[in-house]
Image (cartoon, rainbow, N blue to C red; front, side, top):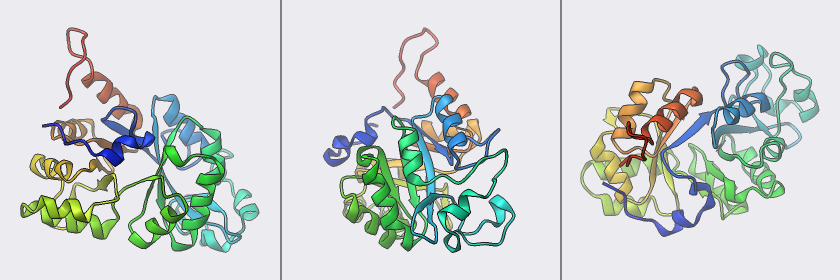
Length: 271
């Protein structure tokens, strides 16, 4: 069943490419380092349109593309990202000569890409939003965060950007949909364009066909993370999911391309 149109989402250029969407999780890091310009370039070279990424803040207030608050996993150092200046972060070799990019650098390096930006701390909300403005990228970003406060802080600076529900809104809407109160879920989700979620939220399954239909009736797209198994992704698309967030964007793009063409060579209806 097709979801009902939602006028505010339909107007946002971020959603102009047809669904289903493949969001390259931290780029494509098969042969590169995650969340670097090389990883983003690899994803785009594979055919991706959407890049999922994360931002933390440097000690001197710059939005830096990095998932973790510390350098322990990515660089084998105990330092916090926010304890080092941008110049100090740039001196760190992440592997193969890869360096931390700023959000502004990433947005400017790939002007045709759409970025799904996860705001990881309160301190980075405004610097990230300012980077979006400086790049003239409001129409091609989606702002998200587990924290409603962080997400709203960024959106106050770029109010025209797309956004997805933060954890409290998503969980509340999920519970309402599960008990059949979809109109109330729609109220909870007003002002956001998508829910981006794992396959389970505690004991609740989030991606049953009925639940996906409920979110669609509430007026939002459904994106699921982090899916690297092609068969599982196929099942999710069969249930009506609009987006797959994946470390293997290359495989997911092949899946989507195969579904869009019938065996006779004509277009097939995905939903």
